[in-house]
Length: 461
Image (cartoon, rainbow, N blue to C red; front, side):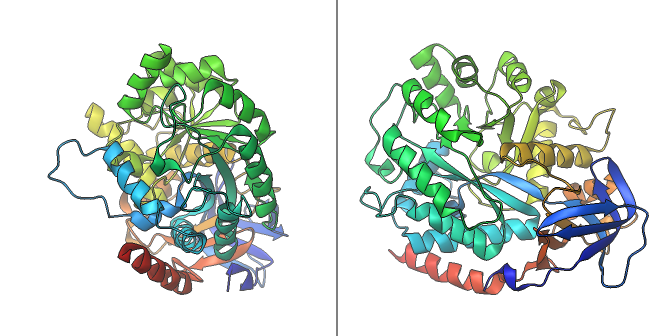
């Protein structure tokens, strides 16, 4: 059973809604075939309209490794020297060795349910688990991609699939390690994977396919030049400058820092999303902002892995674009991603309200609007927000939540991001169908049962 069994209403009506030009009252939203056809403020509800209190657009989760939801909590032990991203990665490699296609689909479905309940209505799946446990291609090279598509279909989340090119273990074309055997492709086989992936998502109404060189460690300059044209008009994502060890390795290999090297050697434009970009010089920060690319920030994961802090205040001050993603999916929560982004800056600079501005003092409003625009751009959407022509992807917030008492306009977003904890997200519509009610996905119980069975088996191996 999937979310398609829920009957869509003809129109929605909200007491207040966040529209592209700001907050409006008494907003009626009409839609057909999953798209918004009209948005009319200052209009009373009509018979048959589904009514709500507060509506905001659904957000894009621009960076996810869905299968990693299954290992959340398994790496939270201390008492060892040198425990960092790289030791976490060793555990991830051991976990991924145990997964078959059925298990990947079940774990992805659980992650996507949690995303939808949180307020993410589209996911950018940075998908690098391609082969069987022996490192051999499945009969269908996009077998694993088809399971990601099936999880998206069963939960109702929008999907931007980003098949990952991964060929090497380090800068300069170092041979891949045995633990990476399930990820590896050459440019020729990657081209076949990409075509098969486009077929795999063909049954989804508004799927987008881009591509993702995993990192500058995993692709040589020649391979990067060979695969980028395969994206056509689709988005291009890459992990970059997440860890200082990566920066040091890139300097040793090329004499340049990772972001500087990429900007110098690739035509980085508004199709690109640079994921993390944590460790940048001041010049790199300005140059990335000027490129039009999106910085893909994953504050919860970056904190969990001890990555460091992105220079958000300087980047936004230079006009940079950003979005947020749940990355390792250790905890899936839209509001907490935005809150952690601001709080990291406050802790580093011992000041408050750092990502608001004179134009928009509300930090919650600034973060939400930035993540909405940047996430849509990064995932290849032509339109986003509550406007005619966009997909009807909408979150209703619970006006009876204690954090919302007395809130209006951008103070609603401040309350949601900084004060609401759980229970603030009430309903979620995706392509005009309501798939979350009372904060619960309509198929949550069935999907969670399948997930628990899978995790019990995987952890028993």
